[in-house]
Image (cartoon, rainbow over all chains, first blue to last red; front, side, top):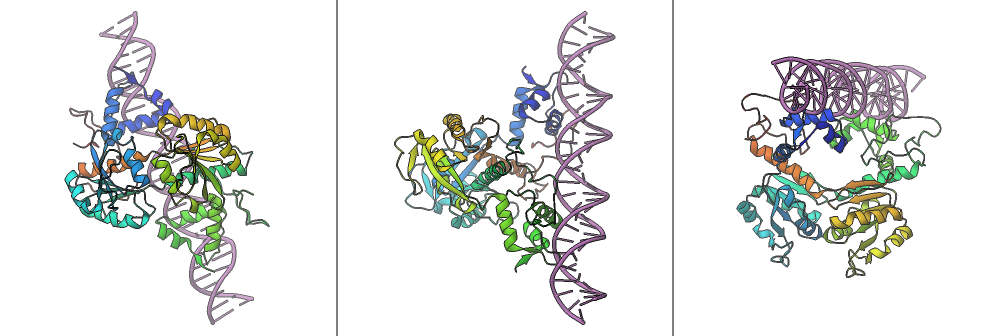
Length: 217
Length: 217
DNA sequence: CCATCTTTGTGCACGCGTTCACAAAGACAT
DNA sequence: ATGTCTTTGTGAACGCGTGCACAAAGATGG
């Protein structure tokens, strides 16, 4: 029986082994003292807790470049997601195959949701259409929405929304890039993690008090 | 002079006003006691600290659906990013316009990076090509990489990498969805934030000890 | 010029998550 | 069976971030 110790896993993941053990204990993944964790059992338990063993039908609304990219994305299937339908408002798109699947028209949205028992919807429409699409998804029974449109969606209680802003990650990189350029000496640890600008305030109200210490010249 | 108080901003953002004031103090954004913060000055300071006032030329490598979607994404320009070039390995793509810009061939990658002074690269290639592209970007002088390919990239010290996994957000939604379905009674607070599975361990090593309390039946 | 009022900036305390450290548990050898 | 060795599971301590509460600062009015 192949096993791993919390120490090995922690080293591989770069975290503290005690924390890892405590986290596992929350999931009830009992290991064997003196041996470690049964790999296969552990994988199964974590997969199950994360919902990876379940089949999640999703619909993608808005089949532009992004929608098509999502439809083709291989990572979904392996995580338990199944693209049940592609929906677009453009009549010219209807029937056209994308990722080996015909695009359906927005008119049939409610029927598609209901027929496939979809509870998760992905919105990849332009900003202007997002709220309207969202409302229809919710009305049709969708209770979780992943929003790629640059709009903040309003939803009733009980519906989860997560917004993906493709430029935020880029901004974080630019932020670090700026700091690299600003202070050539004080080297960044470069672990890629977002970190607070300064650890301790360094306020001076003196002559040049309007240029805070943390700012690049 | 239009101003805002920390109290107003905190209410709008849904956070504690003291925390907001403390955060601002780290940036050196001095407000005026009895009045609040000068809106214009505040916006400028935060923009500057975040690097929004700077011009960041970026290249996008891999102009498939996702690359094209990124090239067309409007959110970049408004955040200080400028798409300096689109690069693809397919000779058939070369010269073809995407988002009003001709796609260039991978052969010219190094020259493009250097000519435009690019320090941030976006990888939207298939998984197989990502590491190779990454190596060339780094060798050409790129020090920050945004990776959309489903691979973990290896880079030398001093280079920042951020990986965007489009299915992670979906997985978080599915996780909550699963919990909604599992325990109809114990209602989720529905704030959309990721939260720990349980707040306190509830271990029992009894007869049915292999079914942890947090697991759905 | 003084009093009053508003809002900032921050010391301090609280609470939560992480880490330490160890007892308990099981494997394995003798 | 008994002892030793390894690794888990977890109580307790530590550290850090958040929130409270208040003194300081400046505006505003009499």
